[in-house]
Image 1 (cartoon, helix red, strand yellow):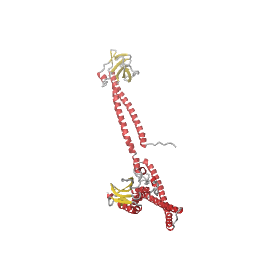
Image 2: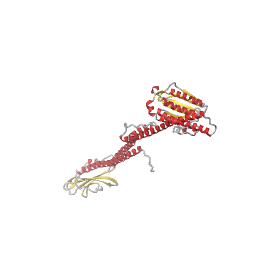
Image 3: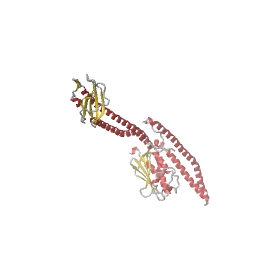
Image 4: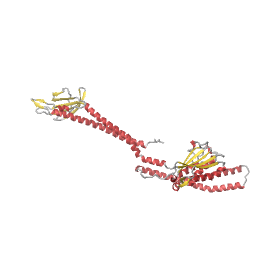
Length: 468
C-alpha cells in the first residue's frame, strides 16, 4: 500500500501564495533596478548631450579657421558632488581644434548634423561616458565632432542611492509579506477552525447536522458530506440501540420465568450434596448474573438514547433530595453487606437543571459500585456540596480503588480490570455512568480517596440559573 504523507493545508497555502508573491517581488525588484539604471543613464546622458550641444552651438568659421567660444555653463552643468572629471575635444575630420588630444573617439561617430552618440570608454585608466555630437559648419567640408566626456562617479552614486532605496522597499515588502500572509491564511482558514471547535465541543453521541450558516461556498459540499455521514452514523447507532433494547426486553420474560422456576425448585426440593446440587447453585448464580447484565444493557440503551430527551425535558431539580433518596434506597443493601453507608449534604437544597430520574440512576450506579467493591465493615460516603457554578456530588469508598493508569479504561463497555475478576459483574457499571453523565450535561472524575486507600468519584452538574 502506498504511503500517504500528511500535509498541512496552512503550509500549502503559505507556499502556494508566498512563493509566487516572493517571485513577483523579485521580478519587481529586478525590473525596478533596470528602470533605475535607465533613468540614471538617461538623465546624465541628457546633461552630457546638452553640454556637447552648448559647445557645438558656438562653432563658427573665421579666416578659414573653425573657431569656438566655450561658454562656462557648457562644462559647469556637469559639476556635481562626486567631483567627476570632465574632458572634451573638438575635431574637424582628423584635425584637433581644441581639447584633450588623447581623448578616445567614439567607435561609431554621428554622421548627421545635430546627431548625438553616447558610448562608454576608458580614459587614463578610468571609465568614462562620452557624448559625441556632429555639427555642420558652413563652408567646412567635413563634420565637426564635439565630444564631451565625464567619469562615472556621480552616476554610480546616484544609482547606488536609488538601488538602496529600492532594496529597502523590497525588504519592507517581503517583511509585510511574511507578517501579513500567515494572518491572511489564518483568516481564510478560520471557518475550518470554527468547524473543528464545533465538532470537538460536541458530545460523543451528538449526530445533529452541522449548521450551514455563514459557511463559505467552498466548504458547503464538505459540510454536506459530513452531515450525510452523521445521518448514516445516527441511523446505525439508533439501530444498534434498538436491537440491544429489543433483545434485552425479549430475553427478560424467559429469564423471569427461569428465575421463577429456580426459586420454586429451591423452595420445594432439597437436593442432596453432589453434582446435581452444585449444578443448581451454578444455574442460580448464572441466571442472577444474566439478569443483572440484561438490566444493565437496558439501562445503557436508555442512557445513550435519552440525550435528546434530556436536552428538552430537563427541569430545575433539587439534587440534594435526589442523592438523599438514592442513599436511602441503597441503605438496606449496604446494611446487608455490612457496609456503613453515610450521607452528608453541605447545603439543605441545591437546584440543578437535569432530569431527576437520570441523575438518580447515575448516583445509584456509583453507590452500587462502591458497595460492591468495598469490603465488609467498610465505609461508603455520599456527599453533596456547592462548588462554584456546579453541584459537586462525591461518592467515596475505602475499597481497593482504581490505579491512575486504568481510570481511562473503566468507562469502556465490558472492560473489567484484573482486580474485578473476584467480583461478579459485566463491566458496564461505569459505562452506564458515563452515558448518563453525558445525557444530563454532567462530568465524572475519578480520583484517589484523600484518607487512605479507596476511590473518590466526583460528579459535577451545572446549577440552575436561579440558584446562582
